[in-house]
Length: 275
Ligand SMILES: [Zn+2]
Image 1 (tube, rainbow, N blue to C red):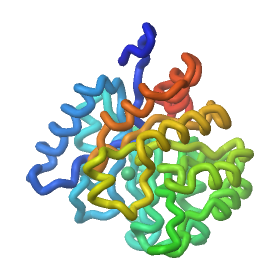
Image 2 (image 1 turned 30 degrees about the vertical axis):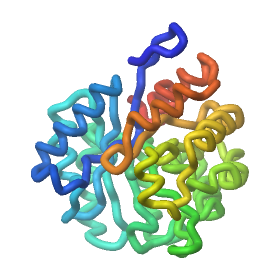
Image 3 (image 1 turned 90 degrees about the horizontal axis):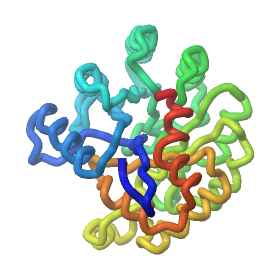
Image 4 (image 1 turned 120 degrees about the vertical axis):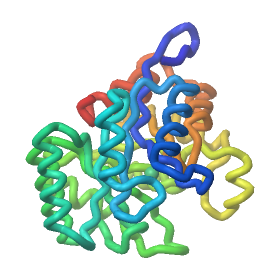
């Protein structure tokens, strides 16, 4: 819970990972770092997103499942890849869904070498619909480095083909937020999280070409999107790489009203991810 202009707000961080840095040697140390960050930033509940890879520095599905099973303030987003172990993953996630242990599925197009129009994704979309959980995906639109794996056109096609599938676009294609929003906002089943909107000065200096916005730009973007689609945007930080604190600071410096703050910080994620 945080206090903004005399009101208290509960917060769900809809986009958390275990930190990747080498200084944390074990999953337990990474978990402790995550819990510390949640505590000092007054996060009431977090969605912990597992990697789709087995060998990873941010925790695979089994690592993250072990954590959420003993922590009622965290829920699991299952990391899925259509590139390998298809039957094994589908069986595993169905088993977890039967016991209500998964709140969403995450895809990593761009990190994994597949595009969102890949027909191998149909099976996981249908499973999400069957259990009424969102599919969350890494979105970027960076034609300097990658093919356009998660181009808004693909996301629109998926949302039109599966009108009961909830699609969460993580990072809102930063930095192409507004033009992507324009292409997708009219689909009722497309949602967004603001993870990676806010990075510290140190990070901006370290990655000058990453396309991250300045603080002022991030505040302006946040205000614009909350005026256009107030019921579709969720607070998220991408902690593990970025900082919760930077994202909270952007919210605090914005001119959002009480209703917008409640929706952004808690109500939208609670409804969309059924928390
Ligand atoms: Zn992430």
